[in-house]
Length: 403
Ligand SMILES: Cc1cc2nc3c(=O)[nH]c(=O)nc-3n(C[C@H](O)[C@H](O)[C@H](O)COP(=O)(O)OP(=O)(O)OC[C@H]3O[C@@H](n4cnc5c(N)ncnc54)[C@H](O)[C@@H]3O)c2cc1C
Picture 1 (cartoon, rainbow, N blue to C red):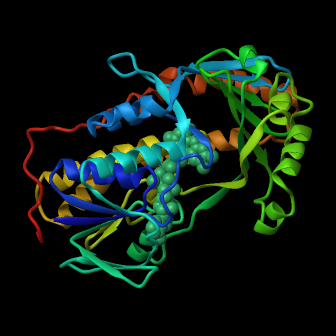
Picture 2 (cartoon, helix red, strand yellow; picture 1 turned 120 degrees about the horizontal axis):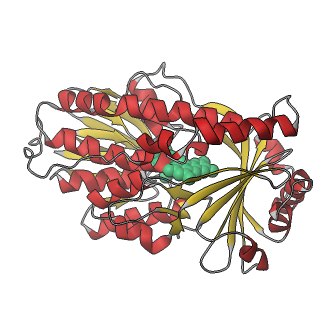
């Protein structure tokens, strides 16, 4: 069997590695040219995602590009701590969550795929896909066509494969926050933040997050509530002007937020945040979607990449364990849907809590203290980060070509 995987982010190369592991040949088609992995924002891979990566024999990649993160500590605009919780149930050997650049993880996974002999095609934007009961074809921007037995759409929240499976699929939803991210290098402010922790501030006008790195840098992000920023609005300010705007928004809040942003460098700006609440159809004929293409949770969930890695393992397992392609894709949908939809819903609640409401600051802080004490706790979140997808090596071999 030959699988065409559209997308070389997190889900695409992870799925190619998983398919390769069960004997299915895969080709990854990524729209952008090969990158150095330095673009965009930082994120945290939770233990459930690290476990999936481990099953793919690729956990060392995360350790090589990231640093450990143990806790989230939440404060209000006055600096008063509202709550604190671990970043998830550690793996059996004690490994905790890892913070890294998203683009570095994608580059590392693509490199690992190539190292294992998987074909990775950069600068290969897919423009059209077709599927029948016999096989799949994709057209590329350069006019060429590629054929295979299975098409995996790992093409992100604006997935074209999702639309091909179901032209009526609802588009992604703006969650009311615009994201900015950056880094302040070699800063004395790093020493003011506890190591191995995300420091979050429910600020008076924006939500702020910062994490010191082992090198003495601080990586940070700012979520600004408000209507989505249009392309024209984004282009109307330079990154430095956006940075000045963020400093204004953070100026009244206690802690190092405003100083970190003022002395740092923006790496991501005016990026509207979306989620994808429910996609009714994840597969049709020989096409299937994984990762953000199927179920993008809001970034506030801290779970998108981990879910993409879990998907990769489960999809490969279902294809390996026999039956027709249609049966395998149905089994994958059944195995994954409930979990990911619950996490998308939890992520949406988490995003809403970052948007200051009509209540005053003191009331909001009091409510958040109660939420972190009784509602969003390590215990209540254990089902998310304590989940471990299974990879049973004793199961049946992969589907033969054309089944
Ligand atoms: C600001 C921010 C912070 C986040 N923080 C976290 C976090 O802390 N923890 C976490 O787990 N997740 C986090 N996430 C979510 C995480 O980044 C995503 O869930 C994850 O990247 C999804 O991976 P994916 O491969 O499904 O999609 P993507 O990473 O979007 O990759 C899709 C790929 O498909 C390619 N593509 C698209 N269309 C085509 C086409 N037509 N032809 C060929 N290629 C195509 C794209 O170029 C891209 O490389 C965050 C997201 C954002 C935006």
